[in-house]
Figure 1 (cartoon, rainbow, N blue to C red):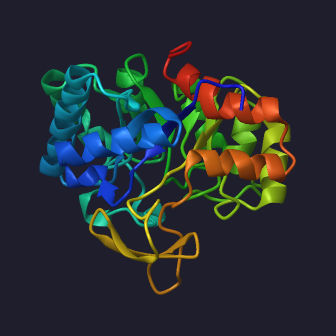
Figure 2 (cartoon, rainbow, N blue to C red):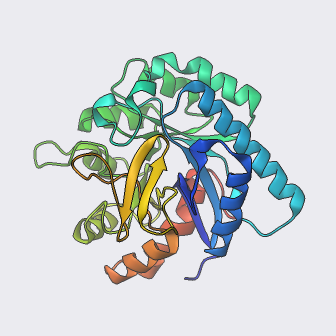
Length: 305
């Protein structure tokens, strides 16, 4: 790959570590080990958590970041936190904790307090735009953070309104959202009509079939797709059962399983593997490189690191 390294802006954990545990030493370990796998920067990503645990995670990430910078050792740079939850639709929760979800209209104080206590650390906020107060929330915070659609039942019209109101991103496209159908184009259809919106894509070939990945790379411009791992603590670990926040997730043969239906519960694929798989699926190398490095930085307003 002709890039300085991979940039992973949606990662919950790996190597037995979960960001949502809120342990600074673990997050430091994650940053050091990710660098050895050519991930040069990342956004530690929280799950849907009670408010006190969200603050614990922010405190842990801040302390880990400060320690890494003071030590001067090789590590993956912490770009800031990706807040996945609590502003999500309970009907599309997947592995997220329904009991901790809340409407965006009730979230103004939380975001302001996080910013006051940990200035500049929050970068990406996931939101379901159909929930009460969502558009007021978007209007208030769109110029300060990346607002990204996630775990949502938004239809085409609602997604278009959200993009026009200031949402600039979609989180793990085609997962935890309604499908794109011929008379109900959904979020993918809205993306195709709004060329300035970024789209995260989990490219392990499991969350989205290779043929659909090829379609997405053709529909969306090369500078809009962001490859993310969405990995959990079972990545780089033996098969077994691992906690994703408070949920038991089984890792078996490179795939995650949770619940009676054996649904996917995050990923155990890392960025270098996804790049290799995309190339094997027939995606042009230039597109893969942009999606793994330049585009994730562009979403955050960065030109390079």
